[in-house]
Image 1: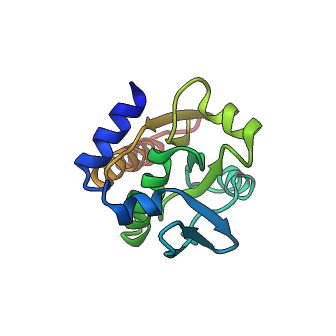
Image 2: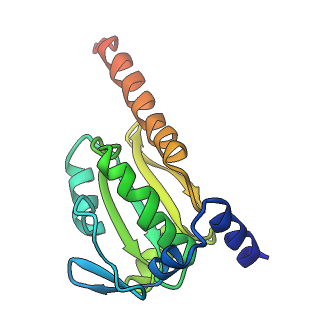
Length: 170
């Protein structure tokens, strides 16, 4: 059933053409991914390793945003090749420490991050009242949906910053 839904979604998005399907199944060679159609696509440079992004989030004031994918997952590859590059081009993640985790390469970490929820999954970790809160989007997402999702973090941070200004220490 999930496969049928994924195929319908891909066809609806206009991604079922031979060229796009050839791009869905990629092989990683350093800084590029090579696809069966012979097309080489540069990897997004804004993504850090999870460890680096986590450490930066712990030390800084920006939330952590993690995309968990797998090479065998067509919807994950569609997200990596369509939605994420557009978001990076638009600098939608500039207020976040952004990382990508491939479930095939980092199984334990990937499973810990996604729990029993499916792939792809975009997870936002943000501090609220001194605790880290997790919010997530699961499945193929549009640029607009992800932008609305990350905008929520900005709203919460703005509200927290405003309330912090009015706090009086005794």
